[in-house]
Image (cartoon, rainbow, N blue to C red; front, top):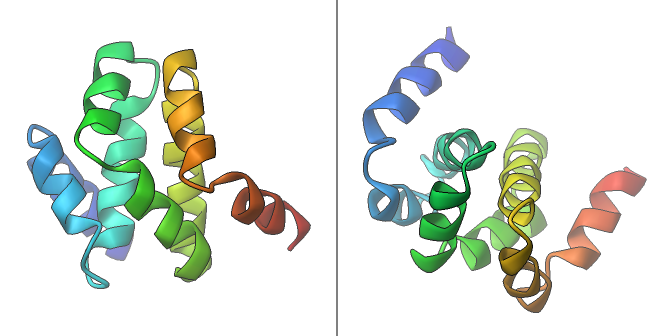
Length: 107
């Protein structure tokens, strides 16, 4: 099952935020990377800060703009989880996330 494989890949990569950010650059791995980052960012301020510092916001916004439906959903979930730490909100807005998030809500 595809989602089970993705979960395993995400768990294997979860200890390496920089590696996950690099995975966001590849069309083959960006959905899984976004899923793993969303999970890492869920209710964990330290991870939320580390993920933003690692440069994940812009590639997540790019996925939100250009990905398939599943990729867009995972990118949105990751950005929402990152935005729970209020200091990340400015970086997310500056990266241009608002417009594609609104577009996603309209579809």
